[in-house]
Image 1 (cartoon, helix red, strand yellow):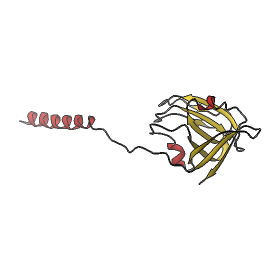
Image 2: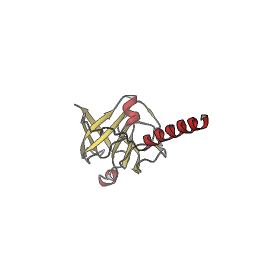
Image 3: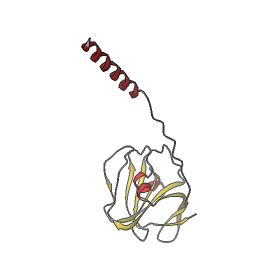
Image 4: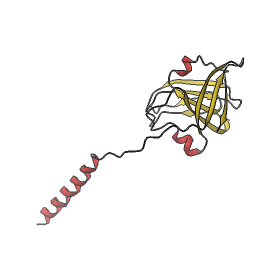
Length: 158
């Protein structure tokens, strides 16, 4: 009788745990929130493109970034704002869309790129040079816009 009771308890526990595997947790889609505008320009002053921008300013916003989002329009971007200039290292954990990662110094000048970052890849993508700002746009746009080291960013908050 004791063996049957143990077997019955084990079976119930196993079936209960197994049924949880088939349940999917649904999370709400994170939508882009326009918080300002950002313009990329050449050192000559010629504007390259103006984008709607969402800012990542708090620790939580910077840690989450564009994770869990399934799309972003080509006229949208996320700008990470840090309080000091240091070498930066980003990765694509839980990021579903390919990105170009553009590193900027304290003068908002492009100092390095990581183009075509692969979704879900946790490999580090370093700035190689100290950066205070990091701009994320859809993969391929840095090349399309012919961005170069030394190009500038200006932005205004809503």
